[in-house]
Length: 78
Image 1 (cartoon, rainbow, N blue to C red):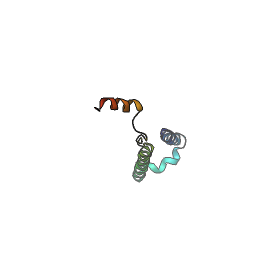
Image 2 (image 1 turned 90 degrees about the vertical axis):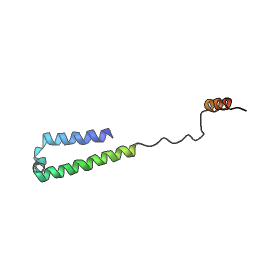
Image 3 (image 1 turned 120 degrees about the vertical axis):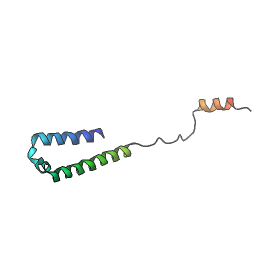
Image 4 (image 1 turned 60 degrees about the horizontal axis):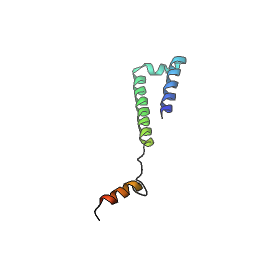
């Protein structure tokens, strides 16, 4: 996911430095408003990607390790 962010930010910086004429529509109030909306949608997408990337570790299929089960058996009164 960091690659997605780095490439996007890198492209935005390169665009601002190399072709400023492309960004002229964002100089006005309406352009700034549209830019805020675009950045908000981008941030929501990044947050969504982070949530999709995390998953819960499933429960062990066979239970505890053998040492733990043997120790538990020796502690219980027979």
